[in-house]
Image (cartoon, rainbow, N blue to C red; front, side, top):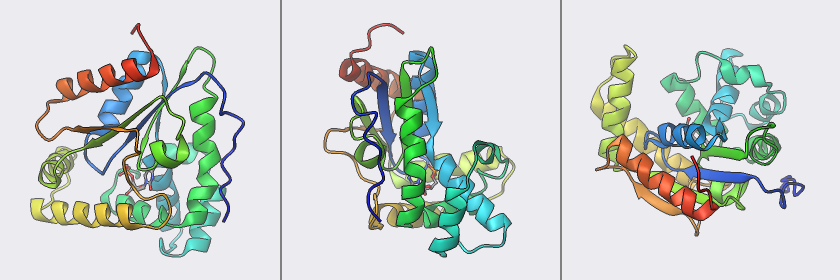
Amino acid sequence: MTDTRSTEYLHTGSIVVAVDGPAAAGKGTLARRLATTLNLVYLDTGSIYRAVAAKLLAAGGDPNDAETATEVARTLVSDDLGRDDLRAEGVGAAASIVSAHQDVRAALLDFQRAVAFDPPPGRAGAVLDGRDIGTVVCPEACAKLFVTASLEERARRRHEELLGRGEERIYARVLEDLKERDARDSARATAPMTAAADAVTLDTSDLDVETAFRKALDIVRTRCGVTAA
Ligand code: DC
């Protein structure tokens, strides 16, 4: 399928910040806080793929079935992003599978770009987090961060998060699941997870949340020319 990316936003003055990286690297926390601090809209693009997966699974569909997944992606509505099953582990794994289908990605591209480049009145732009924001969705973003952490540290954080939600899991299993997801997200043919050539990599393995945020904010302020916050 051809790239359906709209070019109508290329010359707007939106401040667009791309935050990419693997699962459980802390990019969501970071991106949300950057958006709040800089008065930008925040879009968790993973939740869009999760919504497709959740709807598909609820209807008894198979995430490997590209045609059905694409149909679900084309008929997705904003309310689907508020489903309460989006964070379930099974939905995350299925999201990783549906997101490898090229037509699913194409169906969701313009929505993501509209959020980035056509923010509501009073907002100067948006922060999007995902896997391909700096490379495919918003290559023209003024700041691109690739937020990562060691597999072991990400597994530790995800395990803690799951326990905190009352979901009993074995650490080793969480680590294996993350490893599998990393491999699928970075090896797929369409829009694989990768740092854009002009992205700044932020390894949060040994950083506390506050330090990681300060570093990210500095990068965004410098790159996007934002002075006040
Ligand atoms: O960030 P997350 O774990 O909620 O994302 C769930 C899955 O969605 C992830 O494994 C890969 C996919 N995804 C993607 O392919 N592209 C994005 N921009 C965001 C997520």
